Image (cartoon, rainbow, N blue to C red; front, side, top):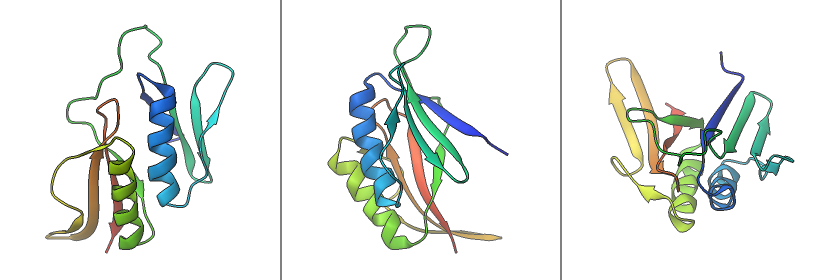
Length: 125
């Protein structure tokens, strides 16, 4: 359904450092900068990108927005969460762990990135 996701960042360097760590914990390669100063993470299933807002205003989080990254194991999610905290991410929601509903079982962890965007790592049980 999605070709790419692009998030606003106030500091590409700070955000790249953060995402290199958290996405690296999930097995992804470091981001690549283009000639416009944007950062791209390329995968077989899509592209994740960081950019300073085109309108020149500060980047900010979307209230109610969450961007989720698929993970292969609970250990990868725990490493993702720990890496994010070590490089300037902030904890939000419940601690990493299993969540269950009537038709689902998910292992989740949540963080806020340096620009305040809410992200999660997810494994379907």
